[in-house]
Length: 287
Ligand code: KIV
Figure (spheres, rainbow, N blue to C red):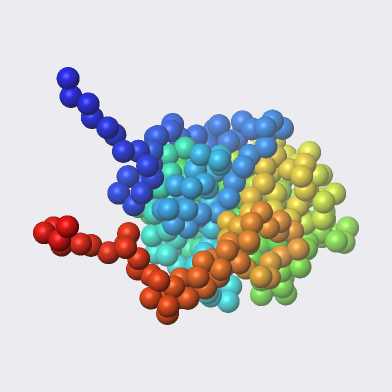
């Protein structure tokens, strides 16, 4: 009898130990008022592998412009960048629903333009859904895409692609007029057929009112624990950056840990402690 050992340790060669059945968009939609939806951003295959089993949804956010590419905002992010990272995240995940952000300029002009961009994104990445920013003005586009088989996650409140119009990244909904407008945005996007809505950077009471007012899940970021789910930028919550938005909770200090590891590496290289005996090859005929 032959004994075969299957090496299931995660590595670059064997990326995923146990393939899991992927959640669906309707499954996320049906979580309204139930177990909170766990969502994080992911931009690379390896990070997707690490996050996948813990999350319900992975968002390939256009925040990758700042996080990965060091750009000053999300505005210069292109469709090609989103497609490359979206495909990488799909390759690294088997369980979570993968949602890819539509970048600035790829959807606002018309529902038809949005369909061209979104259909290319889904076809070339294998992702299940797109996310787009905006309220009432984007409702016809959300309806157009949803009716044509493209699941859409909305994004209202603090919408980073509108940074120039909003005048910064401050919290939204501090005045009654702004609260009423954002509530109208939420209703319009939900009524248009979005399967979920990211609610970013709004006062807590408004996030609660939106969550109570609409029939689809709200996914909060800088919003409220009462939302139907939460999302954070992965690098923020891992502590990769010194400065983050007020609403970010750092669950680790990866920047500190990386710096300490690299400091040790540099010292080992300089002292010739690295590479050691375990990291060099001996010729076969030498003892
Ligand atoms: O781009 C992004 O990462 C996002 C989240 C912050 C919601 O849109």
